[in-house]
Amino acid sequence: MSENTREAAAGERVGSDWVALTKPRIASFIFFAAMIGGLLAGGTQSDWPRILEQALYVTLAAGAGSIFNQVLERDTDARMQRTRSRPIAAGRISVRDAVFYGALMATIGVAGLAARFNLISALLAASTLFAYVAVYTPLKRVSTLNTVVGAIPGAAPPLLGYVAMAGDVGRWAWALFGLIFVWQFPHFMAIAWIYREDYARAGLRMLPSVPGGVGIASRSALVYSLVLIPVALVPAVYGDAGLVYGIGALVASLVYAAAALRFAWKENLSNARLLLFTSLIYLPVLLSLAVLDPTARGAAVWAAP
Image (cartoon, rainbow, N blue to C red; front, side, top):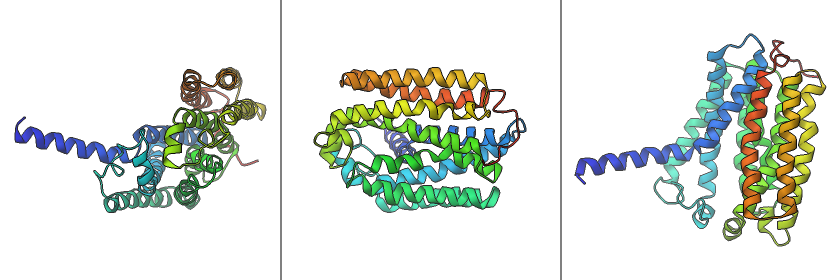
């Protein structure tokens, strides 16, 4: 390999490390969810350039949270098989550089929402970032309740997108927040069960990795999947969505619950992976149904109840 080729390969590796810091798969979902929130706030009068702009700012603020999370968890990341190759844990990016990068992204994201949209969305984004970094991340070492706390910032992207466009929190914003909040628990439990030995090795307090928590984790996933059924149907019950969303949400939620039931019935790797896969399909389907439903997009802005 020539010197120029080696330099090019090294440059590509460094570039990919900086992208990896933002957890691009999670960031892409956050962008999509914030976009959906903005679309529902705009109804039939959607301003696509502004919707995409606010989704970018929300994603930048969330990406900053991912970076700060990896800074604080660099020691535990290094002990876990799943995360030990992350750029900070592996020593390829310094803590100082990562903090600067995260601070820059947070500043652009929050300031962009404040300057280009409204102060409420900026304050909510800053609060979400604080909750994720300063509360959820350290709590993972202390209590299994970290999952509940982490689900709050995890459910924020569509709400932030809605508020950025509407300037207020409407019924659809709360509906999407509640939907994603509850959806996360079976999703989290499947991940935590699959990587329970990793979490235990790192000293992180995930329910399947603590003594006596394995069976409880799968049953919790089932309970939350059942709770999700009425939560997902709230927009249809209030008349903010029609048959397209209502029927689709019911069918998808029953499929999700069936996957959780299978996992609760028999805890094994294949059932945990099935639940995880189902969770990853479920949410994009529900969010897409929300914007495809003619009733959901039929009004310009939903006022808060």
